[in-house]
Every structure is written in structure tokens, then in C-alpha cells.
Length: 351
Image (cartoon, rainbow, N blue to C red; front, top):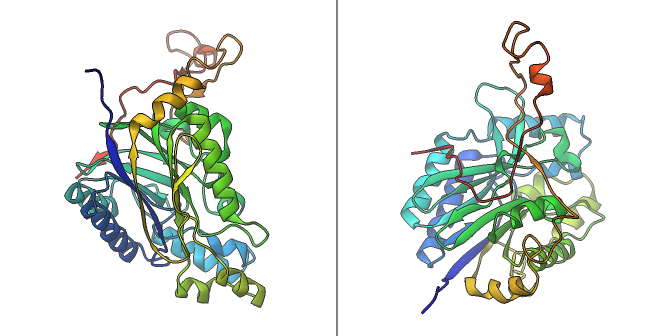
């Protein structure tokens, strides 16, 4: 009889946040989670920085302007601690809807008054936090408010239908990050995107190019979840008439891509909503048999990838000179690395 593989329904969110309002955006997100669960979805992906918003104002406002600083202050005040009240609400919605959630949010560390991370939060269908991925390197205006992430969350999280991974925006073109997730067995990948790129760039074209390439390289399904612009954002963000015209032209781009690099749902039209696709996990098999870039279709005697293990804390407590091993023991310890396997994932917290 052999092994059988499931058909599941995945959901890509294309929606605007309630701009710089954590509580109302969480409530909106929970509504979308429950809607997707009621529609039979097993997994739902959200845009980059959905809670409370992505720092899009830097495409229009000078970084040192009073307005930009005010937006950044509100971003911090409305960012999310993990775990915390906002994640408790998201976990409750995931548990009630029996759906896996990949949520883009701006994260702040408890007890700190300035450091923020661009984060993807992974919640299972029992409402338990599986882990988080902090964007490894902020892009453009993000660098003004987001700290670099670390490898602790560069994981493909196991589920009953395969491993789920996620990256944000430009990370979905980072070959080494993509390979490291593929090596952990990614089955479904959530690519989270903001509502738009700078005025000179067509984001919809880049999403299509990057996600088709990612799906083809990893032989996984890619769920493109994309931000949207609402009337309040169109009022607050632009500075010039050119800015306003640009925002009025923003197009929908949420889509779902197969392991062969073909779009199987979308791209969505402008506006807000949830895009669904029923995907058969067994569709990965033939592409992987043909080319498994993290398996048989490679030369590991020629190429190798190491991932530095864990986070980068601001303070490291080293042994004293009198400790066993002498004063240079800590310096002589080789850099720890981890093999790219799907080991058990530490849990960050739950209700």
C-alpha cells in the first residue's frame, strides 16, 4: 500500500493592518484566522510586519523628520512581546480555528525601550508557539528601526503534513537562507511581503520572480502573503502628489506557487482578502526525485554550508582567568555550528 500524502488547503492573506494600532490589528488578524479555519484551511500566512504595520513611511518621509520619528515611536509602543497578551490572542484564534499561523509582526524585547525585530511568529494548530524567525538583515528603511536577527529561528518547523518555513521580503531571494531551509525539509514556505517597495520598484514583478525561483529550487509550495494599503494609510503616508499617485496604483500580488514554479492561485486583484489553494503534498515527489538540491542532486564533497547556532546576546559571560582551562579557554573553543537537520524545535511559550 505504501505511504500516502495529504491534500491540504493553504491561505495567503492580502490585507492592511489597522495602522499602528496593535490591539485592533490583532483583532483583525484573529478574525482572518477564524475565517480561514472556517473555510477549511490548514495553514494561513500573513504579510511582513502585519502587526502593527511595516515602516513604509521611510519610502516617503525623511528619516530625521518629526513625522518619521513620531511614526517610529508609535511603532515601538504598539510592537509585540513574545509571549505576551497579543500572542495569547493569536494562539487562542489558532487553537479555535485548528489552523497553523505564520504571522508577520514587529517584535520588542521585554524590558527594553528601543530594540525592535522584524519577526515571523509560527503558531501550531493547538495554539502553541512553535518558534519565531527574526529577519537576518533589515532592508532599506527597516534598518532605522529593526535590529539584525539571528539564526535561532532559521528553521523549518515540523507539522503532520510536512515542514513549514518562512522568510520575509528580500530574504526570499537569499540563496543560503533558502538552502538552509530546504535542507531541513521545507514542504510549505510562507513568503511574507510588505504592501509595496520604493517608488521605483514594481514589487508584484519581484514577488513573482522570487517566489517562482524559490519554489523551483526547494521543490516546495510557496504561499505569498502580501500587505495592502487602506484609506488611512493613503492619507498619512504620502508627502508629495507623486507619492499619492504611487499609492493609488498599488496592485494585489498574493499568490500560491507549486513545486514546479507555477502559480496555482492568484495573483489577487487589488484590495483585501484571503487567497486559498488546495495543494497535494505528493506533488513534491517527482520534482524532488529529479532535482533535490539539498539531497542527491548536489556535491557535498565540493560544497558545504554551516549555520552559526543560536542568538547573539548583548553580553556574553566568559570564564575568569582562574577557571579550568586557563585565560584563553573561551577564545580557543571552536565556533559552534549545527547540522541542517529537522531537530526538535524549542517552544517559546504558549497559553
